[in-house]
Amino acid sequence: ADDWEIFKECNHFVDVRSQSDVNTFITQWREINETDLPILFEHFKQSNTIKKQLISMMETAEVSQETDEYNKFKEQIDSLNDIVSSKMEQITGRHLIFSDKFAGAKNEVQVSAQTDGMIFGMWVNLSKNPRIKEIEFPGLTVEIPKAVAMTSLAIRMLMTPEKKFNDEYLFLFKQILCDFLQLPTPPKKIGTMTLRQSPQKNILVNISYPLRNVNSTQPALNFKVQLEPGFITDYVKDATVVQIIPNSDNSNQDEVGVNTQHISKVNLDPETNTMMFSSGVVGTFCIAIPRYAHFPLKMWEFTGTSETSVEIYIKTCLDVELSINIDKDGLCSCESPEDIAFKDLSPVSAIKFLMEKGINLV
Image (cartoon, rainbow, N blue to C red; front, side):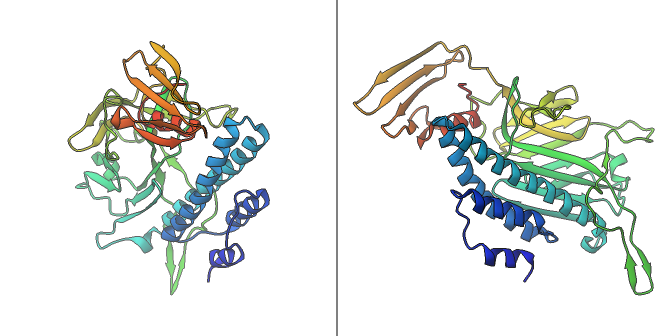
């Protein structure tokens, strides 16, 4: 039994209504040293169960304007997200240090794991094979030039449902990270012993692209992203791809900037349900549409449909028409258009659902 098994034995159930229960879960999980990728992603799945419940309660607090409750749940959600990010850095570093143990017959290292919409993949270039043209990860393919194939580096890919806020663009689908990482000092064998770099924190060193000290032309990296069924609709047909730029002053971690100058050849393919794009740099990317494309609204009106329900009719400037019914419990439903229909969602969840479909009403 490892630390996690002991942890689970001591915590048979986390009552998300109890702040102390959730905080105990967060504290104990943060202290566990994760060394196995599949097991780590099982732990991510368990933490996501808690996070989804916290998000639901946070949305309820937001609607009822209970600021203290909202802030409490948001702080706990942010803590869980921070732990996930930290553990992803740790497990990435560990796989780099022990990459020789994961090498296959062709001296190539490729590992992946996924759960609840989160996908991780890493390829470590130990063979320097000039014939390598592309790297396939779950849900994402990266076409690489010869200069990358001949360089000692690792390519990491991480796709997450978590998306930040930008005032110009509405982010869709998933946030896509693709970065190049420097390989640690190779292990040395001395007799029967193997000496290798200690898997400490903060050992990841990013490599920029285009690569330095390469005299030949370095073309853009080509990406192909597998989309979810039904993602491509009329509401997202004009979507583009943007590079996400973190806030430099750290004043608001939930808000980010964007850059489009390195992005080209964006193409949505309904037949294969994929999006392809090229980028002259590595970084974090997201499919996006203009945030306020549906404003100003052409028309909106409230109509009482019974003593306990009301209907909101909305017509956007792009001529999208919605009729949203709100029942006595404050739950929202929409029957048409069919490709964005939903039933019995809270107001916050309904707004988020429409955003995921490419329609922003706030």
